[in-house]
Image 1 (cartoon, rainbow, N blue to C red):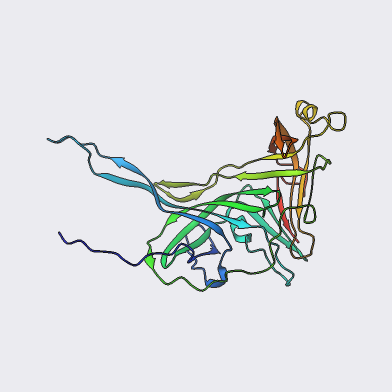
Image 2: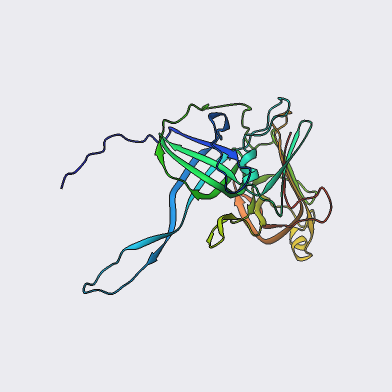
Length: 316
């Protein structure tokens, strides 16, 4: 038996993520270097699958050959909040990802809004380069969580599911290592927020738009499907005296109100999240630097009122 030594390594920092929207679920669109996505902490499962076991008997104990079923690709990453910039018609870099996660894009002068939709979900083509190993993904759809933590960058945490396409080697295209606008730390100067028309010191918050895209490989159907959406979250902020604000009664009374987080102060680099129908659940006390905090799980519901959303992300 001849043993072949493999000595050419893959360098972790030499990676690129490209994304382009598809005209339909079944047409792969090859992204170009201009379609690069600004990401950190990329994680790729290049061939996710379940197994089929034949388990036929023979004269020997032991395992039998296993076949692959439901082959697909999983990809996750973080996209740091950035505005769309001030150029005419500018869209945020993360916009295509949000569209692939079940959001519709609408644009007005200087404002781009992403709000959840209930049908006609878009699919994306992606190419993940791992130092030359080229992993295309077709029909990609995903889920997204917006995470806020004081004194850190806010991020969109993205999880993508897509159809497997053959892997090949191709040198990683040249993409920028940094592009403006500058990301901003969550702090008093850059971030304002309110919950049910109350504001105080915010420690952390998250908004999870869980679409749970899944592979369907059935006679007559092959693709990634979104069949439901649940929007939830969590929040921790400075605890208050109950004679100032009784949050526990708000939970017991099933109060519903607005969660609003506006990050950034300059036009072209503002990202706002607004959830019009937010309910507080499961209150807890915590501690932050010897100060009591209140934490809650959040239930974010759709609204029948035009212009109100269970959550919308607004770039301006």
